Length: 136
Image (cartoon, rainbow, N blue to C red):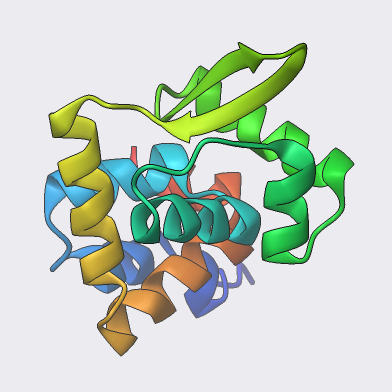
């Protein structure tokens, strides 16, 4: 007898869970917010739009190790959300200045004020790549 996948792995369940999320926001979450650290980093930069700092200082601020923060920052640089600059021989990071990207980040952060949305984002992060495969 073939068993159905658990509810949290069932494509219909995932589709219903995310059905009320705006397509642009859903795409942003699927492509950019795949870890709690990236979520923390986006919150940091959204709360401090003009932040330009080193990975060491950012790691200290968010309470993570430098090695972990550097990798997550590099991922955000690759995705086009964060810009990396050299300053006095050190790499610094800042949110991109593009208004469209900043508006999308701001929209994501505002959406996170809703408890149900936070639950959906946590679900996405915990499910990892499987979540994105279901919704493709």
